[in-house]
Length: 313
Image (tube, rainbow, N blue to C red; front, side, top):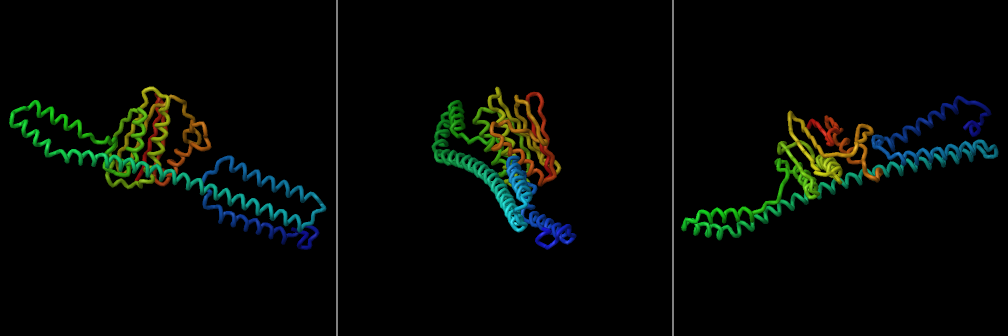
């Protein structure tokens, strides 16, 4: 910068001007990219950013050492390198946003699936009730005839047959809170379909002040991990207990676990083969819990893995 301003040596003006330019670049960078500083980038993305920056710096030094290159050309090349790095940073920022939206969309799809499951259960219940009501007059007529002849044993058999035919779709959880029941019934039914023993105790108010979206993120991911951990486990089982005490939601999810659990950054490390595509579940749970006054603890003992949550809501 000294040569373009007509100085042969050190210049205080040029030095101060350079610092002002650096400060302006810092403010611009913070303005455009500071909103997503809390979002974690994959290590390989950071590697790409650092590699591109190092390539530009090394290239600039090589050009600077070449005395045949004019100061104007050097400034032009350095400016081009700066622009390239800004473009890469912008593209990486856009990639992070897209990844976050993809995760949110997946959570919404899971929530929609759980609601579809709940609607299906309700429709099955309504269909069974309509079918039973359709034949109700004939049932009463038959029972009346048997009663008039004093056939008490046949009446009992007839009533028992009516009870067996009136099959209600199974609801594993019926706490009265529709949003919570929906996601729990959906996930626990998946566990039952995989021959996993499920023990459930849920006592919460109907007007629980917790959004359906947050419920889906928390319980969907935790139960998904519990179900996944039961693969190749003999006598698989999942215990779920949710209570509401003193304006706080107390959650405990326990499942059999034969593999050794490794922790990193306070969270269990995924055991799935593709680590890059997995391992986001507990991170998303942690992000949701960070919106509340909450604690998230893990225990692994006696071949069981337990997750404990305390949320002030």
